[in-house]
Length: 127
Image (tube, rainbow, N blue to C red; front, top):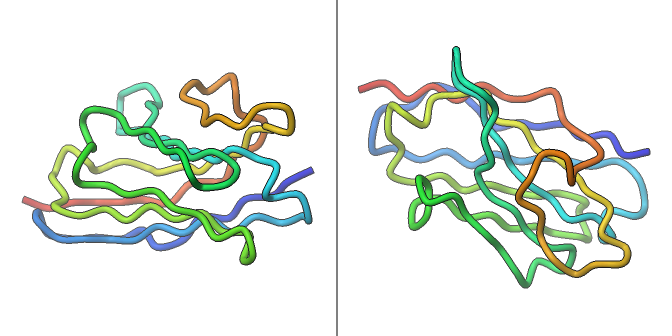
């Protein structure tokens, strides 16, 4: 069982930056691929970024590529999402997720590949 708690959301002006954190419980954090998803009002939840269990491989949605950076610190059981050059369309509830990758070294891009989810943190970007 893994529990995930996001933090770092808030209100920021367009062009600004935020760093989201997701702290995980448990001693097997390093065996999980981690990901960030977001859900804007009236829209379906969408993939933002994924990172493999070692942190050596990452993947981004086209809409955030070059602006967002995912990273992880396995010693601290934490995954991060650095968000720069924020746009109003980045406004959403951001969720972190963990997927068991004990037998795979890759990141995951689809919701059904993740086993555990956080409660979400609101990011609002004003124009």
